[in-house]
Length: 287
Image (cartoon, rainbow, N blue to C red; front, side):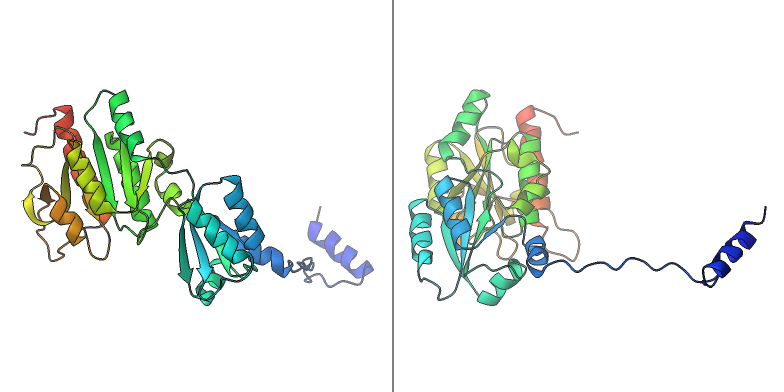
């Protein structure tokens, strides 16, 4: 049977050309508000009422973003509530906030939700004690890239570290992107956020933890004794380990750089050094 002829006969009867294609149904445009809502970052809570209710409910919040110069009405209450809960309030340009909110009406404020609540320093020591192990902590000093922090959390959990310590300011927190980059490790590894990294290093040392900074001009990473209670400080992408933090450390661990580039990505360097600590703690001998 000739199906093409049958098609031609049908088209002639119905007044259609045989080479004419059926038209696609026109797609109705989505409402502007729905499109804007879809573009909002997944970890953002947008608008005054939504942010205030999130604070009241006890939901884990990483930080509050407020447009510069905005402190009227309920924004004052939001700032006060955030202060009571020790949540950082960051001022940002209104245009940046517009872009982050994808066009949604933010009323000058948005909250960055944390994928998990923060732990306390005591929780890290308790985790080590529960496993009957010497403490092993990782300090991420002013790491601002969420992918780097997520990768550090993933590596730290893999090598058996008991927790991560990060600063409250000039660093990324437990955002959605960090959680995703950690490949789920953030659910198993406690993360502590502290106001002063230098003071935290001093406290760790006072409690018997040896603290080492990952930086240049130190001793070779494989020659230090890392078998006991130890903490590794990994610096941020821009300036590395802070000067004051580095000065308080017991030592500096360095990796050989044989190429033209003089530094490694923070999460890469951290991962290498973490595995050296794990190797020594597990008693695995190098050949």
